[in-house]
Image (cartoon, rainbow, N blue to C red; front, side, top):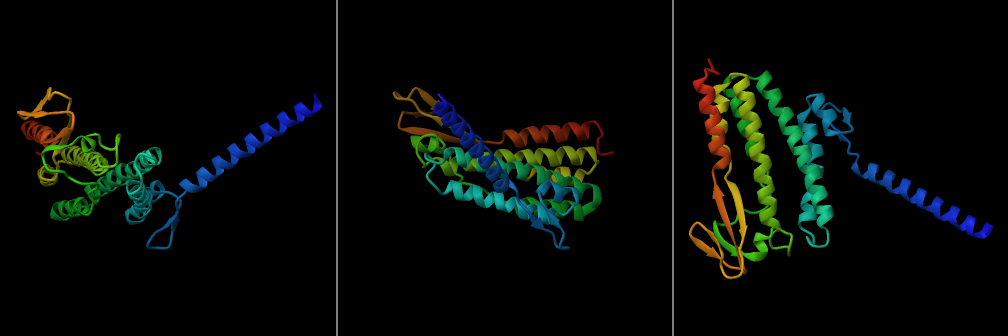
Length: 244
């Protein structure tokens, strides 16, 4: 009986040590430090943004970006969990940093300098994945990585368009609030097309844009839904005198 109790205690101890060790390793893995141009060290991109050192913040984001690209280039079926985790961390940084920097630019700069800085910042954002042609595609591509690796480039592009257009939405809202019509008009031209991906069915029961999509194919369609919504928001702001 004593031996059984001793073994049970050892198992519990090993489990606790393993759990603590995993937690410690996880925290160490997620901790990122970057150094700003002035030599100041930041332990997170949030800290760098609070100090308005956005270059250092983007340096931290690039580390998450590299990890995301590394996971994208691997076996998508094997490392799906790691890939989605890396994707989440990158876009969490993406959303936070660009939003903070845009707020700073709109509050500190005026006129063409503000508009040009924001336009340049958007142009420097790397496009992820691959934009496939509109129309029929292989079924595995339409599955966007849930079945085979062929759809990973499309999936990465779809996710990127969502976050990029969300950033444009944020810029438009800030520009309207700050009565900056030049930036508001400029951002309407920066939206990218929305991507709609439809999986086919055996027998060709699915139809998109007049095209029947059978079980061996999918269909990729592009729309201007986000751009149209933004234009409507801008027009309403003009009608209400938001820029007066």
